[in-house]
Length: 58
Image 1 (cartoon, rainbow, N blue to C red):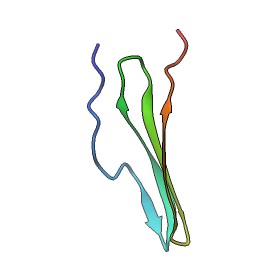
Image 2 (spheres, helix red, strand yellow):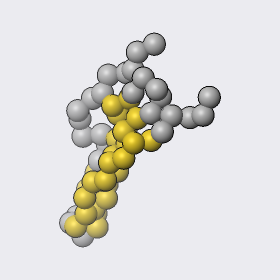
Image 3 (cartoon, one colour):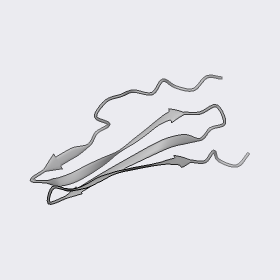
Image 4 (cartoon, rainbow, N blue to C red):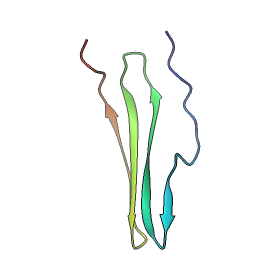
């Protein structure tokens, strides 16, 4: 089993009048965990937070 290929694209982020955001998942790891990044902007101020989502229990 191999992990899916991570894509370096816009990941569905959006911004309208300085407000918006989005979420990206990947890369995926062999143990089932993956990286998730969430982006939020309000009135043009915000940023991106990335974290590792653990694999589901087996």
